[in-house]
Structure formats: structure tokens, C-alpha cells
Image 1 (cartoon, rainbow, N blue to C red):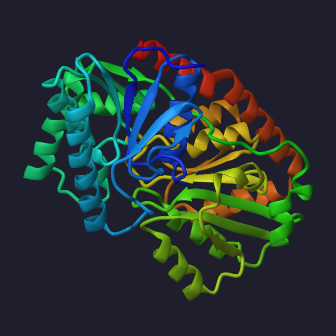
Image 2: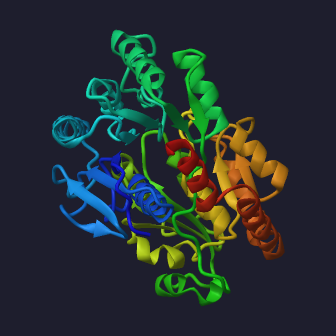
Length: 394
């Protein structure tokens, strides 16, 4: 659909195609989907090639971000640069009454919203994870320190000045109101599966065959190895199961990548495979290579992040292995729909026992996978999310 004469929506996101991270893939889907619904979009980013047009989405690269980094200072400096360039670009090129959609990477990018209101623009802010709560849980900020208190106040200001603030789950909405006060213009819009497994027998999966694991029970963790993720419980379960016919596959990268590699080397775990991020085009194959896919959250972070990999696992008709507080909303959903396993962080022995039992009962794996797919079709999906965003932005 050709754009109209209206001013385009300005999507400000540090990460965009061809980036491999979840935010890049989600924002690319969102931009293309909005254009298909008749909303012209210009993207301000740091990862795409400048001046390209992707499915009628105009892309402007403000600076060059070649790859993800685990170094906090580099991330901070890169984020500050992107913030300043985005502010300058919109002040020069933005029009009065034009709408902004701002994704919370870097976390402080939302400050653009109140500042650009002075230029007569309006904005919707998307929380990919709750900041500064995420920094506190990561140990980067003190719970009641001055910096934390100041950042909470700034985030509350960003939310209150917005036309709407999007959060990714009801639990995140409750947590944000707890941190920043009630009366915020919140809207819950779930993420979606950016890709899902191709249908077919796992024994015929090309990726599994390449690894020589097409006939081996495979537990897969695919995505960010972040500070808020509990890889330790998964690794210690792998240690317990080191002599059993199960394998653990970790695909991705992030702050805990070195920690993962060192644990595997120290324990000499031959049942653990570690691979880098795979191109998005390969995801339909990699997502279908496993028997069960894992999400692992440190205690207390369940309302701070909404793992987007959850939707891809469901859509791929795979059971979800969730390491998290069993009382959290995500755990309760999985238990109610009977489409996965839930274990508390640190319960490596219990996890190993459940995985070993599941490996011996493939019919249970298949049944949970089918229920997972049904749940995705009934409750989630890109079209549902695009409809919600479209209504919000019009």
C-alpha cells in the first residue's frame, strides 16, 4: 500500500533489521506491518543501512552500531550518541503534530518524548523491559539509591507525558504502576513470534541433522544470555544429566556468554553445545531442531521482562521449559494450559528429573507441543498486536 500524504510515523529504535536481537526483529515486523495497514513509517535507527527502503518503510541510520557488546560503558556511550543524534534529527526534520513511537533501547531514549513535545510532536513509548527496575535486579543500581530514585521519577515523567505507554504484559503494567504511580496511560500489547518452526518431524530437521542430534532429546535455549537470565539452573541440570541421552543447546550471546563457556569448560560437559546467534532466515529450522525450548529468569524479574522467545516457542508447537517463580503469571499460564514444565530457579535436580522423565515419554512432549500451538493461535500473534498498535496510533 502506498503511503498517504500524512506525515510519517517516526519509529525511534536503536535496533532494527538486519540486527539479530529480539528488539531489532520485533521493530522491523512492527514497522512493516504498520505500513501494510496504511500508516507511513520512517525509522530512525543505528543498525540498518542508511537510506534504504524496506517494504516501503523509510530507514535513516543515525550512527553505526555494528554488533552487540557486553561492555556497559560502550553500551552507554553508544546509547547517548544515538539519543543526541535522534533529538537533533527530529528537531530539524520533524513536523508539528507528527507522532513518535519510541522503543526503550537504550533505556533513557524515552526522554526524547517530553523534550520533543516542545517541538509540537506527540509520542507513544514502548517498554521492552522495565527500567530502572531491570538495572536494580542486575546489580547495576542500588535499590533505593539516588540514581535509582531519579531514574524512576524520569520514567514516570516519560509515561505521564505520553499519549500512551505500551507494556508487554499485565504483570509489567502492575509493576510499573507500583514503581511510578497509578494513573499512567498504560496499554498492554503482547509481542509475537518473529519466526516459528517449519512443520514436520524433528528427526528430519536439517539443523538437528547437521549437529548429529536428530535422534537425541534436545533442550534448547535460544536468545540473549543476559544478566536477568538464570542460565545456572539449566547448566547445573545439564551437569546432573551428563551421562544421560539428553543434550543442551545454547544459541545466542550476551553478558553471560563467557560465564556459560567457562562453566562448560570447567565441568567438561560434552552434553552442552554453544552456538552464536543464527540469522533470522534460519530460525524456522533452528526453532524446530529441539524437543523443548527454555526460558530462564532470575528470581524477581518475572514482572520486569516479557521474554519474546515465549511466543516463538508456542508458535513452533514446542513445550516451554520455564525456570522462574511458579507463582508468576507466565508460569501459571503454562501450568493451566499444560504446555510446558515449570521449575523454580536453583532447582537443578528437580529440573533434571523432569527432563529425564519427559525424554522417556515422547507422547507427552508431542501433546504439550500441540497445546502450545493452540494457545498461541487463540491468544497471541502478529496480526492481533498490529491491530492494537494501529488503533493506538491512529
